[in-house]
Amino acid sequence: MNFKSLRELLFIFTSWWNPVTENNNRLRLYHAALSFLGTDVTPKDEVPDDYACAETIWTLLSLVDPNAFGITKQISTYYFYKALKESTKFQKVDAPLEGDLCISPTGFVSHKSKIKSGHMGIVMENRKIGANDSFSGKFINDRYTIESWKKHWVDNGYKMDFFRVL
Image (cartoon, rainbow, N blue to C red; front, side, top):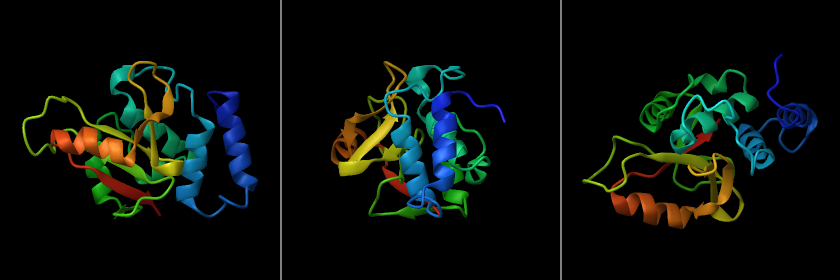
């Protein structure tokens, strides 16, 4: 196996024996997200940092499951959303928990919006949402809560859906 970093190797090692996350993919994803807070999850910058949210989430999914739960590598919130909706390994939920995906995809805007691109992240503790920061390229959880995400994205015409990995 080719590991990108010591942090990735440590996450993989600890997730194999951690009884809290052993059989719960949602919690495994949450712990992966926690372990990468404050870092650039996609340091190769195949996608510019200001558009790397989907690639960041896909990378975290692929750490929890090498096949990313059947989701092919995505760099677009539009195609990521379509893949989540069609997947049998993800379920749309109304009451999000830590480790659930939050997505406001490009292309599903109800009216003309001043925001040109969608965004996605992972629900963290205290209803925060961890996501790629467009400015620093780091995965952070101090910019949005579920409520502030809704105010920013939904109030600007985007949908806001949550998906849970099964």
